[in-house]
Image (cartoon, rainbow, N blue to C red):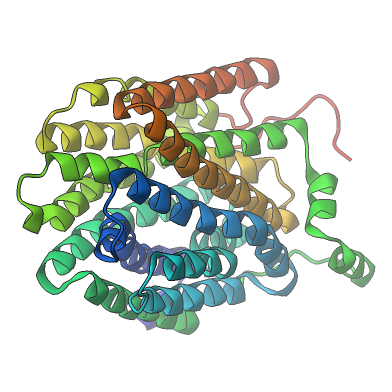
Length: 423
């Protein structure tokens, strides 16, 4: 199989390698991640509000590390190679997931999560590797395929981890997950290739090497790019707003505690599988109808489906609604990523995607803390209403940005030619 991949063009080899590697990495990571609220309870924290607070802090610390370090890793990838960044991120993920299985206190979990955020970030590294070499006409499709692999890993991982957790204990799940991620690392090392770089004169390369990440962002930023990065932050804040609440909601609906992990994993997996299917389809729809229009439709559907979650009183109802919502959520990330890449200089793709991923991490970091804080003073129903309102506001933002600036991508998938020449 490896030999067949190596006969493909470099961009296709990297695409399929990244797809397979990210599927395995996300499967391994999510297998343990879904168990964290229950793992914390196993360590002695049983009060629901405290569990939500620890879970929110756990998720936020990782996102904080990603927010700070992802742009730095992206810039290093632009300078020294995108493959090396994917190898670094995958190796760090494998080691930290295995160490999580050895943790004895919630504090140790928090420290490992912070290290994970600082040292990993495989989705951004894989996206940069693929985006750097993919032809423009295939860019939305390629990024959509990467997103699909992420969602498939996210769908299989929780189910896989849930059943292992119920059968063999939570700690065993982390060790098995680490082994799966190590297999992903071997695949990247053996098969992925460094994309060809566009030629730069030595003076330009030396000047670029001396720049800091924020200097690079100032040099390539436009109002449209900054707006897209802001949307990425807000979307992901809304998605993560409910992350400390959903596991506790599932726990309250499950009658048999012996099936808690597998039930939570199945619900999370169904949602992620729906998102995976959506991401693959939306990559094609974005090329045909334009990323802005597709993004607007997905965000509207996501916002509306927060409302019926307030009325859920069964595991089946919760899983069904989250699965339907996943069909809309899955199209948001590939659409925004394709729009970000389209308005970014080709030789700065890794840096810009790094900042975009950093914005996503900030959103993921703020969401759990805000959601847990709101739950501590209100109810889960209030949290759902607030999430709906937040997604509604960002949907209005997408609409206004599209009306004021026009769509960045035409139905053909090519960028709109602006009246004023760019410097």
